[in-house]
Length: 500
Image (cartoon, rainbow, N blue to C red; front, side, top):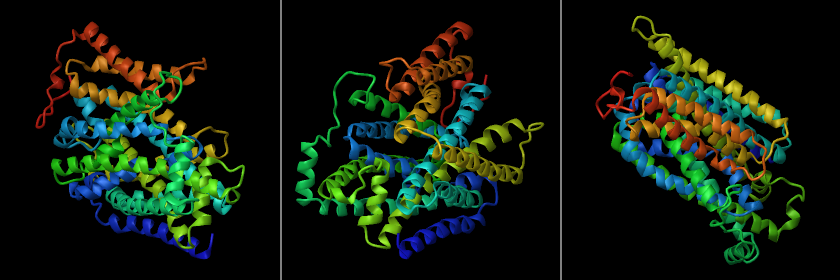
């Protein structure tokens, strides 16, 4: 690391913190803090969704997977293309026309209050876990490059993100995401070009070496549910993207920040294509790094972990100043996801718990109190996520990408199922949905804790949980409430009825 690199990184951190204070003056009420007044351009929101779904897990772990293995996990991205048009046609109208601050408000209208609170609590817990993983991973990699203490790296990234997210609200988050996404896209292209050009034989050498080693393999058509063959990864990807695009407050919150529904639809479709291409590019990057170090074996320490290969390449093979900017992009990938996590978790806490449970005589807390609660919640979630990241840094954990997919399947599959039943299965009532949600988590946590050989791969936890949720919800609705169409199911574009 040269002084130029360090200067670039520090300047980037100061820029992100400054953006928070710039947008602070616009946060006059809770609507502006959580929804930016619904006035942001669709293309900015689209890149913000991209940056939100794109994290240090994508930037570091995906290239590490194809560097050490192949491209089998690329099939997860097929679910993005499949879900984007479904979300635009069937889900987006509900969220837009009901004018929700929290996605989980819909669950109370459609089912009951316990479903709303249970789902919101599960989402908040997932945000804490995701914050920890996202903060831990780049700190681990940057430590390998710079020698900085990993605990200091985690604290620095987390504190800066808490600062600009707390004072700036969702508008600061979305505009910072926009800037960060541009840096990420440019950095990705630069790394791939440099690594392929530095490989013996250039592009043809990269291609032939990758083909000979089976690095480009995506379609492993074996039928074995205990390992990540194609159909396991594909099903896991569909479930994960269903949950992310229909029940993740980080994403749903952005549907409310455009002026109209058409703009929100454009942002979803554009993001779907961009995310699919992005996933492919990062798997290719891993193969390109493998080919580069196959040609320059002495340039890579023999005992290095795959997650540290990309940061080492950035620090050693890119020009001074450019290395600092690209390492800032690693921080950008972290901070864009962290800021979205914190703001979205804060909106869920404020809307689903504080505003809903502390209303008195039909009056909700005023905007000033909601704004204070949102900022305090942002800090609280950030602190707990940072503490968990510090624990991860000092514990013995396995593959970080698998850990993330494990959390995703266990904690969010049931949420995606609730919204699916709410939109498409009008005869499911509140009691049945609550029973199904409990059954979903019972199955997911049981699979996660099981130790028997041949159990389903972790990518299938969410799928089996969702199947169980639907089955139990139907039976419970039939047995205890006659399986009749509930009044609360009558929710179209302009209607919002009380929960039965």
